[in-house]
Amino acid sequence: MKTDVLIKYLIYQLYRARLKLSGVSAASDPEELHQFRVALRRSRSLLQLYLPKSDAIHDVIKTMFRPTNILRELDVLLHSLEKNDYPKLYKQLRSYRNRQYKLITPDIYIEHNTNLLEKLIDELLTINTAYTDKTLIQKALKYYKKTNTAYKALAPDTPPKKLHELRIKFKTARYALELLKENGLSHNDKKIDYAKKKQDELGAIQDAHSQLVLLKTFCKTCKLDECRHLYKARKKEYKALVKTAMSNRSD
Image 1 (cartoon, one colour):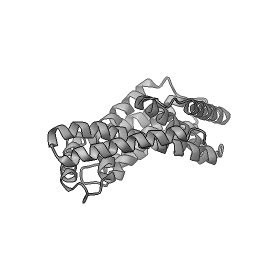
Image 2: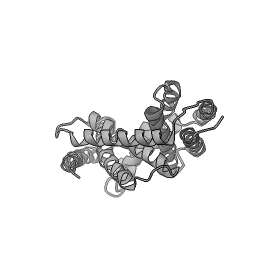
Image 3: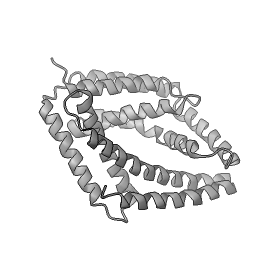
Image 4: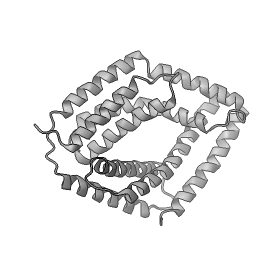
């Protein structure tokens, strides 16, 4: 049986996720976790777009992805902080981050999910999508257009949840267009750059919102003035990011 472009690409992403997972720990570079998550996100996005009936595979990937959300949020928050500006808070957040890594990614998590990824790769090899190159292209371009139309129609008071959903849609559009490009099927560099730009804009809003939620909870227990000051500063930044994103809809 011939393995088509889509299946080969999905297998590559899951294999990449397996390799990155082996290097994730409290002591590792945060980029290891990020790349693991990116590979899983690409797989989930493309499965939803091109193989919407593959719920079982999608759900398994989701179970691997979800526990790492808090780890990524802490990594992003710590990376955004100037250590000298918030010395006490930075130290406490760093300690909390390391405890979360040890709690969420022990050896048993790594081993269990490595085995799951291998099983998913085997499962993908049994799927015959029967997608032509033309169908892959048409579906990607249609999804991109639909996503951009939804973005242009955003209301100024759109809630964070809706912005996050749209960010995910731009990711899916970007990943689909990159699938086409990397396999020589179609080159849409301007569309890829635009989708990435909007993904980053909306991602900054999501990161800021997630940090507000995280800090609000964390400040209840750490009782540091630094925590409250940072929360107020990030709240202002969040509002500014939303305002900028809304004004950029005509780009």
